[in-house]
Image (cartoon, rainbow, N blue to C red; front, side):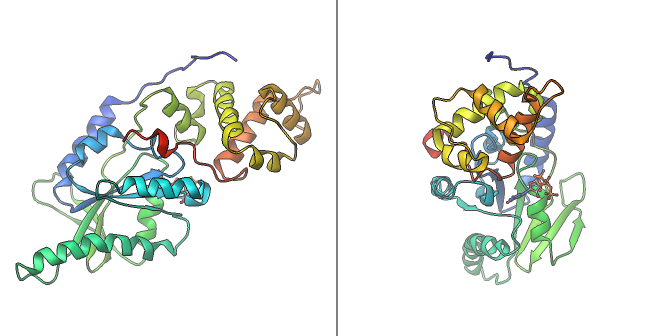
Length: 292
Ligand code: G4P
């Protein structure tokens, strides 16, 4: 397979600037920022440009899609992201029960603020947060989950051009509806492939065979047992990637009219099963590679 065929990899400076201006403008209205990251790719879903803007704010990192990522690796990420006194938790946002765990975590910041204000004689405080994250990371799911029993209120805020929609989660805690769309920043080609692998960016940004080669090499390194169990075949690390594709395609009956395996279809099905946790729970990016 050919390498270095990266097509059209560019990020969107215009959009990025717009989103970052909106975030900067509204940052002063919140006590802390909830940063959503995909627990399978915490590095590629972490936007360094955004982190620079919010560096002086307290942060709660919510690593979404716990049900799809490797539990051991997720624990390591949780520890790693608390290293600067920030809070971090791996969450399955499709599970309603997670709301109480998230609220308990955030209580740490509420208690800190209460203590500070009590010294000034103020008893009733509320705390406000902004939610940020690249597309597909689970922002809407998170906001809907937290908004279950609440009403969204639009308020005009001093010094801010547009009314802001606040979601009142409880008497102490409000969430700001996310300002602007934050596109992922491709730090390098690996990030682009990781984002394409999980469907955050369109997979046609890179040749499909290149994405597959990257995926299969990753699987051979860490999760061959899960892969073999899904496709009911004892593949070995030394097996050629084309042999793997041919075998799976034929077993599944993905054949064209000449009885040849439809390679594109086979790759697409494997990619889809990988993304949706059907092959197993995978973490692509490891704490050992962290540079954030
Ligand atoms: P966004 O606003 O950040 O763009 O993301 P959004 O909430 O729309 O979530 C993107 C997809 O990820 C949705 O799936 C959503 O259901 C799914 N998702 C979010 N959090 C989790 C999680 O913790 N675990 C799992 N398994 N999935 C999660 P979709 O296929 O686009 O829609 P649908 O399945 O909800 O219909």
